[in-house]
Figure 1 (cartoon, rainbow, N blue to C red):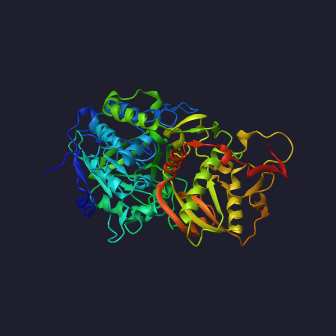
Figure 2 (spheres, rainbow, N blue to C red; figure 1 turned 180 degrees about the vertical axis):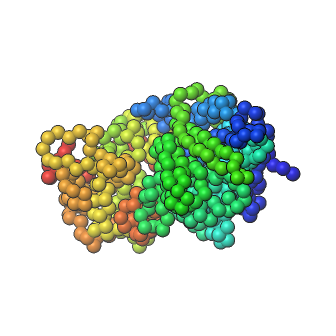
Figure 3 (cartoon, rainbow, N blue to C red; figure 1 turned 90 degrees about the vertical axis):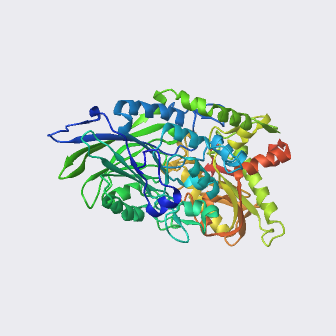
Length: 598
């Protein structure tokens, strides 16, 4: 029984056979040219999204308003759907494919709600809004992203079950059998007017960092080898199975760098390396890095052929469009040309079909995030948090410190002083004076990080702070300082700068990186190298995220699976009041040759 394009083999079959072979219906004569007795050519289009992170609508649940940024981008699948339909109308629906490169079910309060508040895994639970939207739009395949594992494997499996398209992960293996835990690839046959079908294969690759970032969920269950290694295994197989065109959907950036240092032997952002070193790939849809790469051409070292890479901007801000031209020559289809560009979702309206489909879910989540859970005695803002010790970051550290102290009570580590790290995840985060809602508290911590406790020495803490201080642009003493030009040195993002509470220190930005930390004290006394501390730290940092020194190898004395965001929300509910008098203090400051900057 032949399969149509909207069906694919089940997980067990797909894992063993590794393929979902589909057959497109006939195309119109206008969809190809040069057929008949002359040269036969065919062109089709592959569209791609990545890092959607739970964005269905052009809405920011943390500000309770339409999404907007400095560039006036828009977000969401409702906008993407309109772009997709425009391309399908231009090219003919049967001459197009639509794929995704991962990080789909985490990132907004909409996606959080259906993982935790009204979970899709519950008895008679709802269908995930991302599955509903992607099914309606008509995705053909999607690669797994690392954030797919944030809520645990049961949530991911339920989401997979709800999707009308396969979730691909050639390098997501069962830890015991080392066989693919998800379909490695998807394959389809596009029919052409000349009657010769074009076989197109999509290989899905995910990020090896899952093994450390979501260790609590995957350890002993799944393992994640490198992208290059698995591409070298699967691409020749796809070619031997008759694939005329091989596409890769890779949840991995193009930079060739890794944020987990030596924690894993694999490269995190390996997409360009795969293009360069693995023969037989025509194009790669890139994800994970959250940067826009309209078109990048990488020459494969073995074949000398160009591989075209494209990464559309995150959250549905862009749609990648690959146009692929083929010619029938020497008894087979040959790829003649590949080009890529990105389409801006801000240029179109939301698809009313998506608005109608998920309007009720959206309203339900808006109501949830606007629940009042407590009050604050004063307004707190993150605007200056990247360069000043701000009460709003002290608040996060206070909750984390209290949580770890309570968890260690009665243990052998109970007498060690507890330090805490926190980052400014959003410079627009704020807590108002008066009533405080879930969305306002959640806005302090938009990621699903969990909390751990690791033991560090005084010398290691100083190294940690020195590494964090690389975030500041070296600024000589004298003259005015422009805060807008002070941070993000070497493109270090805000979330990779940590403020540490529980001790006091200065950061001398007139000094070179590595020798900036001064006056490091605990309880008013200089910190000794051999002193021991417990650091309350998020699991991303503890697992090597950001490549901070020492912490990933440090002794873990406690960890839990509750998101830090929820811990903060529960703290506010329990206390009833956020009172800065109990936690706000200036523990660190920027200096230039010992003189405070501010």
